[in-house]
Image (tube, rainbow, N blue to C red; front, side):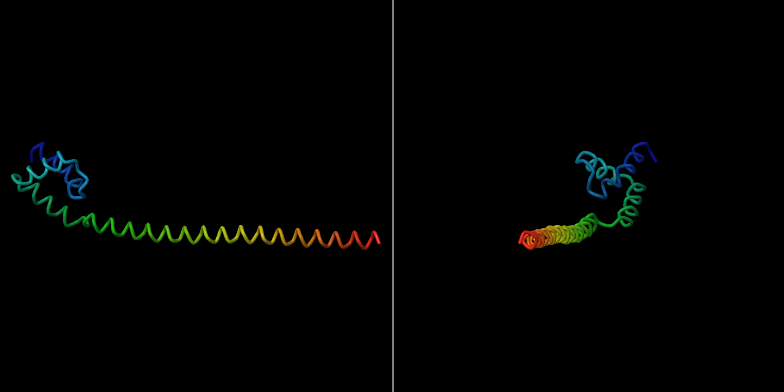
Length: 108
């Protein structure tokens, strides 16, 4: 195995995932045409790692679920804050009316 093969084996995971630069991908592709040991390593590595489309699909689905949970949580927080403010206003008005009623009785 030459030094060039070591470099190719380092680049293969990036090449398989589809994130290697154009130059690196071209280099790997050219090398795989001539080197049988790297070609075998590539076949094994390609089969061991799921396709990038599957990973993206799953992460999008997880993100969508997370976003939905966050929206629901935010809605409950807003509902709680609104309830707290409404109850506080009602209690304040009730206490104010009761105090006003007591003042009328004492001044009469």
